[in-house]
Image 1 (spheres, rainbow, N blue to C red):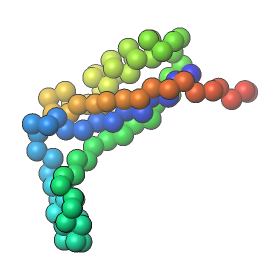
Image 2 (tube, rainbow, N blue to C red):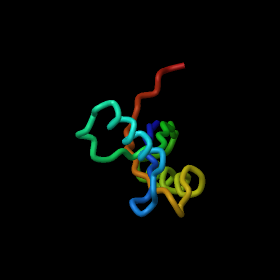
Image 3 (cartoon, rainbow, N blue to C red):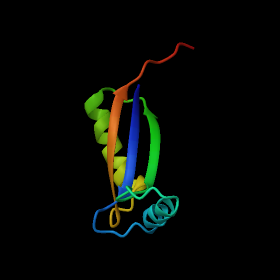
Length: 87
């Protein structure tokens, strides 16, 4: 069993309006050292894959097909093996 932690963000060339609003709000709260804010989506997905290579292939495939808008977003992920608790 594997746990995929998938982080989706806008591509660098895409304006992140929510991130800009958060940055402005932080500046109003006097957090003037904040240089930039990037907001995105986070997914945790458990996979019952045969091995790490298969798990990686599936994560990359379903992220491209479903989790991201390929025109505007990109993703990174972490994949770790997790223990299965007995029945």
